[in-house]
Image 1 (cartoon, each protein chain N blue to C red):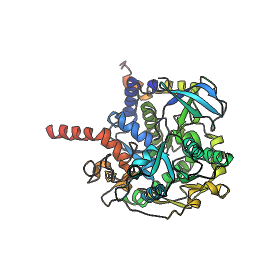
Image 2 (image 1 turned 120 degrees about the vertical axis):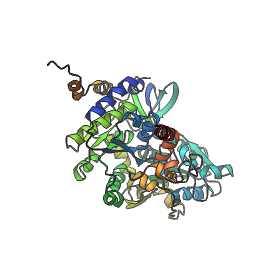
Image 3 (image 1 turned 180 degrees about the vertical axis):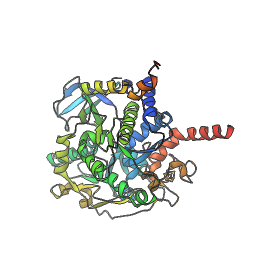
Image 4 (image 1 turned 90 degrees about the vertical axis):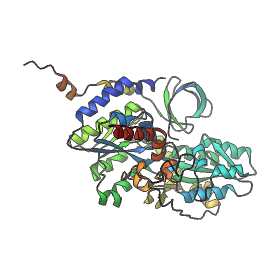
Length: 383
Length: 82
Ligand code: SF4
């Protein structure tokens, strides 16, 4: 398939890997964070870590929308779905997230609640049109990529004069999460795992462009390379980061020029600015409260805001004490460091956030990386 | 849920929609977030919306960049003439 096969070519991957090995300075190490869950998935699925020299470390960041949604908000959604005759719609992955007591949207659906999995936010509007006598709530989640579609949906509902449609908004922002990680006391104090640079997200950047990352290069002197989702894109971005670090540069570079413009998608940005405004603070699962890191619906569109229409209490529910997601998301620990990884906590029965979606660090490692770990250790044991 | 592949625009439909081919799967998507899309373009699709058009020339450039040998590689592989 065009734009896919040629970006997955194994021969070229080896070539880029060779360049990386040649250019990575043996006298130092490189700790690079891929912010986005799509990259985490690609790195695990294509075994990119195996192609990297041992002094180049990939750290999985918090860019998985399912993983970072706080459990309190999932609980809110479950309570909403139990309002008689209400229809709650969301993207498929959301339905599986378990709460502290093992409940999930999927489970209450099995018990009779009307929870519907949708592919696109536009489907939620259609459901509202088809069910004029029932309240329809769209549980909206995600980063800058899913926010513009939600904005379109709200405007559409307004244009159609729908009175039974609202959005439970949980949209979050990438740049604020990156700065939060860089400023977090763990990363500052422990200092054991310095983050040297970032692979910038692919789809998020198609919307926001390269400019928002300039803050990190200026304020924190960390290079950022925006990369596409295919394995060769990720490898080339790693090479570009190594080159910047070797040359003492900290710039925003773009590997994904085939889809990311420096200014991003201005049409989408204007739409988002029209419908949403910043929240002063928002809880991220694994990161805690992050200032100015999420969006809420503007008062002009209050009638489509589920938080205005329904009583939605603020719930803060802590993760299991054994869960190391917070440290993993900040690059301080690895999934294997968690005592319950792969035993109590598995993709079928996720205890913490990083195990919930295939883009989470623990789930990606569970699916693709754990056998490599055991191979490595058995090889070591046999040696 | 961010995983996505470039989609080929097969047909423009009413209401700012388009029929795309995603690796053999046909789907109607929204063009509300993009401008000037034509049949034959490739777009990045996320939750049913095209987010951006792919630039074929830039894609070609990127593939060329992938194939560039590191300058260091040349130095290492340089035949020693001494
Ligand atoms: S394995 Fe589970 S409990 Fe442990 S850090 Fe990962 S998500 Fe948390």
